[in-house]
Length: 203
Length: 412
Image 1 (tube, rainbow over the protein chains, first blue to last red):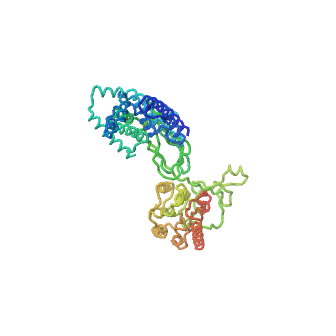
Image 2: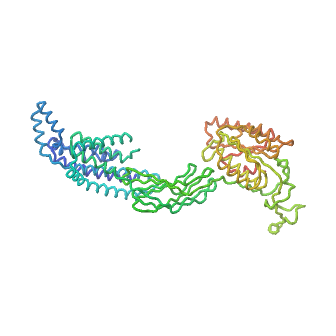
Image 3: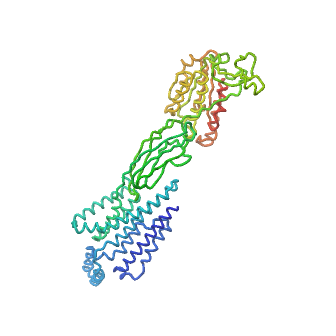
């Protein structure tokens, strides 16, 4: 139980940090202007509730909620968003369409750092949580896993952080020097989607 | 290919980001969706294994613990799990046959444990399995290393120590051609007993005489032609009980001890495995015992059923030639050895001695309900009473108890 508890504590800490970062993103996004109620407190409560329910505190659903809360800052870059505004316009909601355009249009800068940080924290939390669950299992079988787990957590943190630190630069290089055509990027996306779907079905 | 739990989480996260990115045509989300996949793409660092030492001590007999020690040097990076594979009939009593360690560069791993073999046989302990998982637990590589380890497990031979020779009329006379009482004394020491008139002076044991203030003489096993025939029942119904304690294993243990007792006393011992129709020609001495013992090591329960009658029929010419004492080791309630025993005893005009070692298990895993158990027990008792009525000597052995006391009764 001790290793699972350790995993839960680490996952909760990472989830709360993510929640805090998301809150900051949310408060500086147009979404904050649309909602009158402080629903963002939910972000801090959900991981605690998940721990009490003996589940992974930083689950995929919680990660999805965090992404949705952070969405306000990138919506203005989306073609789909403008299609939506056009649709509103078409259905005679001129004022609403104009209002939405006016509050979202200033947020057009492309910045992946917030989403990357969230993803890194989520990935690190999953890796640590699964490592702790496995250590718990091995401990029950009578194996001595304390040192192995300690080394593993340190290694996971360091390696994932290294990838997190290098990733934007690699992306920048790819984006500026190679100028990958959007069609090619789309194809890669579809192939990755199919591979992922296949692997999930196998699971 | 099985996807690990961690890989599943990473793929799910990547898929979620990718889907949202494609749905909202967001460059940010599509770009970030590759991040979890990068973790997945990190390869396993190859590892190498070098065995420094491997050895096994003890465990020559069923139930006797043995110790395995293996030292290996491993080079690589990740979480390494080393497992020494044990056959299913082995029981760990101390230590572990698997070790887990976080590996950075080079490290020595020592596997040391004690186990007990619960079944006879020749076992290969040559498989050392290594699994190296990367630190993210997303992929693992497996490697097998062969060791030069073997273990031959035999049943412990129950040695029968006769304290003194009781002179009188034996209930079970020895075979017709057994001339042991008037034979020439050999060189195998048997016992020390009190002097009786007629004993040669050269046999007096002076030290024992001085110690006891009575004249004591050494008695040696006498040489002579004697023959014993053991019928070991290996039919399907013998495989009853737990994997550790069942009728078949008990029968083999008894057969082993009986053969040892007689072969070392210069009896000619013939052997027949009922069910396999496997015959070992009568012979005496340690070589014969080794042959029987090594055959007993590999014998398993037969697929088909062979009646004891046909077993006696197959051995008929040897029984008529050697006129041996026959010992049937069986479950009488299933094999019903009455006719077979009578036929074996009528192989000579005067009648040959026959003993049936009837195996029973009163409190063990017989299976079935109480009514069934009582039915089986009453069937066994009725068969035994019919055998005794026909003049066949029957010795019952509860296989949950020690064999040596029962053997004393078989070999008196």
